[in-house]
Length: 321
Image 1: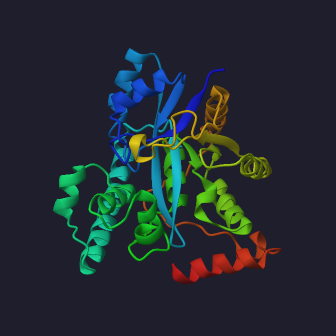
Image 2: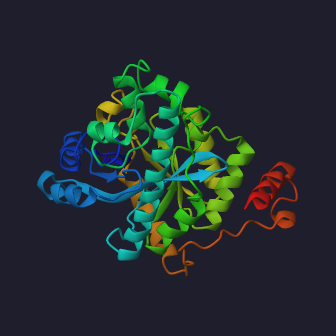
């Protein structure tokens, strides 16, 4: 069986392998294709695509956008977007600049509490790549504030922790529209990591679907068989396709293997083929311009008549926008 991994990170974000080394590693693992989905940037794609011919493997151009939704960090994977288009590249620069500002706020907040951290120290440790919270976790571990990356997320920088700073108004809905505008395949990444209730998750999916969502990440390193079945049922209910990937980060997540996760992943190439076929069908439909426009919220009376909880969430967002 030809296998793929549609969620992989390089050293251009918070992975530890360079794009070319990652391509060689994926080929050695026996994959037919893998998607390079670094956080908020496509800097490694040219290197990875160049290496693909040498190692006899397909590299799927990708990106993983970090967005904000009710104070939660929601990730949208994009596959096959026209990453060389100047307007797409300009929008990515805007998102990267917002991540940079968020990172500065995290540094300032930690420093104010006596943690020995600065922009210069982070740059000395990790260079000027796109920093994610995993970089902060490594810094805290290497400087003795925590015993490891997991503890850093649990006590310092997780979504409910003191030093978590959400991104400013980078919306998952605008990102989804952006990807469709440039012929990409938007996929909701690891849906169960956001600790949403069933109703909250369904509301998010309904709204993302209205903006062009094509898939949800059903197959993931941390998912049990029961969780896969649950997400497959949701995908079927909302006419979405399953996606999947390991979220491989090299030595930053040493227990996760590319293409295999914790040994639970065997994602056939047909998953990628199906996603591409669906995206191709949708490419004939007009896609609204995504450049900084406001997001249309659902009609409260019509869309949530049988679900007061969802109505309350929408009304809360309206009142705060």
